[in-house]
Image (tube, rainbow, N blue to C red):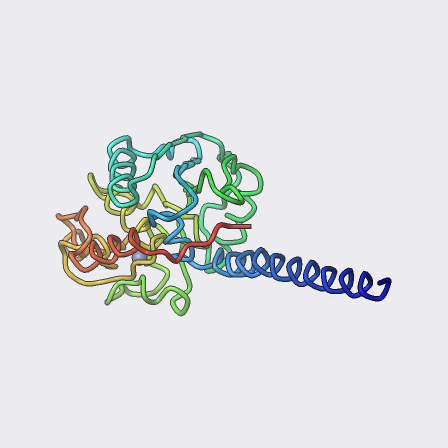
Length: 263
Ligand SMILES: [Zn+2]
């Protein structure tokens, strides 16, 4: 009798321990996956877009330096496109949070990511929930010129360059899974800002570059500081549409069941 009681207790203890181990793995594995993917643009694409995502609201926080305020038309187009492809509730938060002295006048190479990591620690108010609710997108509008390393961002570089690499600068960059930087001073033409925002949004959703002057994921929107206007690519047309292939990819992401909440 005693022996059978002990046996029963042992069996139930083993079952309980196994259940605990398995349930812990179910938490730790997604946590690890999202920890890794959080560093990669496109890493949260299905969390933003899938209809099975545990996140029902996308919060867009736009923090800018004095004088670098985002254009209302570009903000409206960004919101409209996020709603169109995610079918989620979108909330915009705009704030002149970042001080004028917080960013150097020129930033070289990967220094930009050290600077923006610091800016996020200081100014970011909205965070993605652990199990669901809000997923956030953080956009910084900075008063600086960024000269990226040719090697690291060669794919975002134009096909041709003017004189030296120091004359090439970037208008925007996506980094990590949920952040982008817009270099407002580099936005020199009307309607360019909408194109840049939608282009970077495409990267957040995992889209790569593609050619075609009507395609917002064209990479040749970088303008040349010292080049004559007629040598700037796409100088009179800034598209605001994704290509039909990219639209299809975004539609597939909406149907994708491959979602895991962030832990
Ligand atoms: Zn790009």
